[in-house]
Image 1 (cartoon, rainbow, N blue to C red):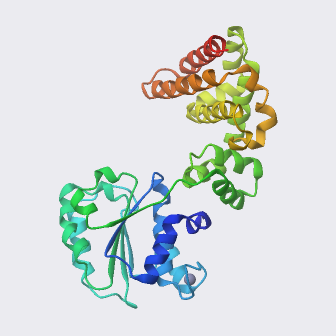
Image 2: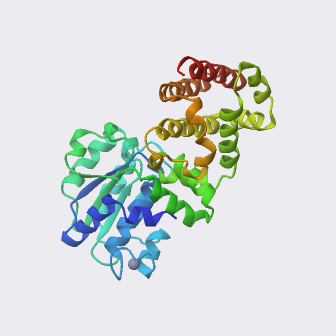
Image 3: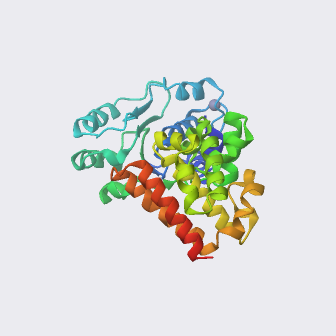
Length: 325
Ligand SMILES: [Zn+2]
């Protein structure tokens, strides 16, 4: 569970404040990391129902919410499907029924951007004037798909991206492994759910080491074929190459940053290994290589064979390194 980082987020503190002062009718919780939305909502629900204070996560009320058995906390669309108007009609008609226990009744619509236009329009009146005690939460990673009329009736609370240290600490708690946590944090783009997926996947350590090896050892075009036919590269090709390109991009970003400030690099756990690359890959070259990696990613989507994508990318990286010395 990733509740610690969520609890310390600015967004959660805003909610705590509202819980104390009185909740608004409706909220949009926005984030780039859609997979953390249900957990974040549950944390907010805990803050509202907690027997102690501020979402202790231990009392029986908090536990009911985490286990999703509180009948007054209703979560919709956890399966992330299209939300049709009928589902919203059901919500609207059930919202008038009084809470089973206490005074609060919460509705959470996951991936609310998947509501059809008709469904969003159906929700408008309830958003504006919900029955007493009802609060509606819309979670989304795509606010542009939410109608302005819906937005104007909600308070939008954005969850910021998490910094490296926060993600690292959270992953360390999850895995107990410093190396894995550092890799997960550095490849997560500030997204906790992405970090958690990486942290439980030991393949990432292999990919990371292979990418460092490639940058250190592939020095001329005659080295490329040897690298591509190596066991490690074959495995990456089998995995689909995405993961390898992600770690390669993180490493090159760090090589670039090494020129300015060691403190800002993400892959601190391998600083001694990547430090020598600074003399080999100039700032301009590193920037161009990252651009080329993104182009290679686009090629993967066009069904170009993965070996070919990798081979062309390595040739381009060598060329860029040479041209931009
Ligand atoms: Zn509690």
